[in-house]
Image 1 (cartoon, one colour):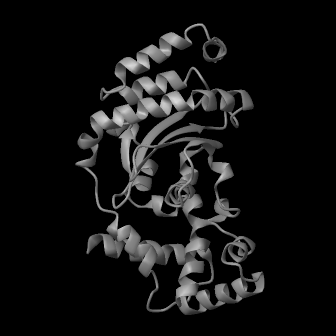
Image 2 (cartoon, helix red, strand yellow):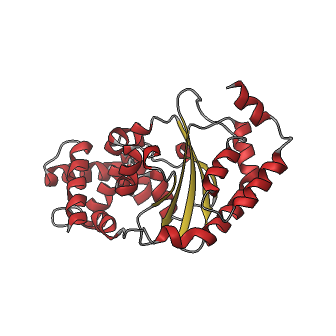
Length: 269
């Protein structure tokens, strides 16, 4: 740890580290070099690079070695992303920059079945995302994960990331210009995922109830749903009761199970 502290606190080799990044910006190993550079700015336990392109499921850019990819990460890339706060923030047009998950997640996110059965398995106490807009259709996220031993990111570390962000985003865009064709050839359509969100319980729930069900699954409380849809909390509670009655469920976990079953059926069709 002492070695890492001294490495971050020293700025003597900053220009040299940037020069190394520039030299690798159009090469396949750029993400690994970028990880090494970011470790001079802040502490983190995990580093993941993912691109989100319209009409495609997320594409994992780094790590590429199967032994470095956890089952939870593969689950996220395959289908769980559809309920993730970061994915929906990107879908809603969040501005590029440095963003902590805690600042964009719904107010009841930690109570969702997605959090309990998937995200929690990452073992993170803080997630910091550098969001880079690559072009009109593709967004890239550099995700730094911190586990309990590191605690939450400090203001000093956040400031360092924000100061370097313009340079880092420019270099990431150059990397994508050189390597995008290689990654996009492995992209899979997100059609089943979009249909899952759009058609879940379509023969049972009303349009408004499906809209509220989506927000419930993503971790919004009744108050947050009321604020977003501009309706009263009482109306939301009535809708929630009707949703459970129509789906024959009593908990959010049971709704989640039905949603995953619906998603799996679409993915296999």
